[in-house]
Amino acid sequence: MTTNAVRVTRAEYCVIACAEAWRDNGEVLASPMGLIPSVGARLARRTFSPDLLLTDGEAMLVGPDGEPEGWLPYRHHLTMVTGGRRHVMMGASQIDRFGNQNISCIGAWDRPARQLLGVRGAPVNTLNNPVSYWVPKHSTRVFVPKVDMICGVGYDSAAAAGPSATRFHRIPRVVSDLGVFDFATPDHAMRLVSLHPGVTLEEVRGATGFELAGCEEAAYTREPTTEELRLIREVLDPDGLREREVAR
Amino acid sequence: MTDKTMTPEDVVRRLRSGMTVGIGGWGSRRKPMALVRALLRSPVTDLTVISYGGPDVGLLAAAGRIRTLIAPFATLDSIPLEPHFRAARQAGAFELMEIDEAMFMWGLHAAANRLPFLPVRAGIGSDVMRVNPGLRTVTSPYEDGETFVAMPALRMDAALVHLNRADRLGNGQYLGPDPYFDDLFCEAADSAYLSCERIVDGFKGAPAQSLLVKRYAVTGVVESPHGAHFTSCAPDYGRDEPFQKLYASTPWAEFAERFLSGPDEKSYQCAVQSWHEERT
Image 1 (spheres, chains in turn brown, cyan):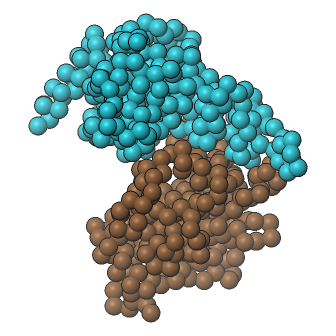
Image 2: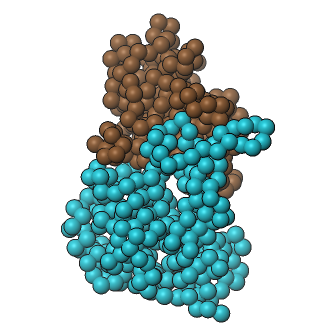
Image 3: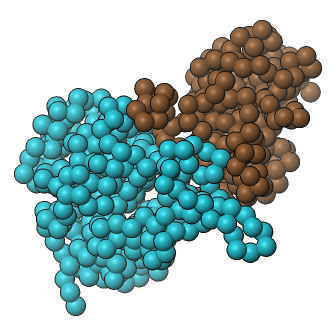
């Protein structure tokens, strides 16, 4: 069931791709960072992943209508992280071929050219619960051969650190404005899973600072159903803020 | 019973240059800003600051009071990057112990529990280990044999926190949705100073869980209405977004001259009020 009448925007494909990250996750906390992942998480909760837990962005767990169903202040949120009952979709100022992520600083750590947020919870997230990433502007500045500061731990770094690091480590997917990526290759190198409709292979390759696996067999990101499109447009993001995060 | 009420000036008179000072709240939320502003009016400097960083870190960094910062981030929340923290970092103005949010929390727990460290599954595999060469790992003595980071206790000389209500004995009540880590900060410090929106005579009828900070862990209580300004102090007030924007976009010297050069907290609050009146 696809919608042919109204053109699906790139931002809406991104919402679908983010929502898919939480498919079959069961009763875990969906922690989206950024607007499009947030719309995606709420879409998944309302459709194919009804058991997901969501927060109001503050200290409450809320149902799909925004009504509170639980209390989740920061210290309990961190327990959900270490207990593994959470799937977060973080941002990434830089990400490399093995999923190492940086949100701390650009340049030498001792005296950064650009100070960013800091490591935040990326180290604990990546070692304890599944961590996906959302990149609204796919470019060679973000998809780099080597990140300046490893905040989120990639597959190679986790393997080098040993069993305590790999035990619960998993990076299910990376979603950008160009496509969907995972690490389902023998050496856990980043693989192109799907292009968003309208994006070419050359475009993705040109915007990525390392060699991507899977380019030959890549599919297209699926179409939203009529009901999904209605939910996105009329219920979850009626003001169309998604189009500001990804404009195309 | 001991009356622990004091002024912001009394608090900073008890602080010394070179001390390790923990600051409660989270990002740009319920920061003890009146106490930080009092610190800025004092000569105290060369501080090791422990904070889930917000404008407290930005202000102290801009004023050159920080020798070492221990933090997982510094943010203004609605403005993701703290501009004065950024500028100071990019100028190499202070040392940084950059650790993960959970490592930080376990450091507070260790200090509050008088333990030298607590094991945490965070840090290994990341560059937190590279930029903090002093961090050590510990191997589980049980069958699993797993290796964890031994997060050292974040023990403090003094902690500064801001809550909604307090009594004169040092019991503190939060009315917002999140306690953050303020009780842990108080318990992790040799002395703790609690500022509040309003001092009350007691907490009759209060939900027991809202009584977050206990008097045994508090040295001094300061009544300071709007003392968290411009950060949020729900439900008493939200973040002053226009003012935060001003803070983030005004050159430091100009901001400090207009808002921080007065003799006390009252002069700050008056300067803020006249700024708001000028805008309307």
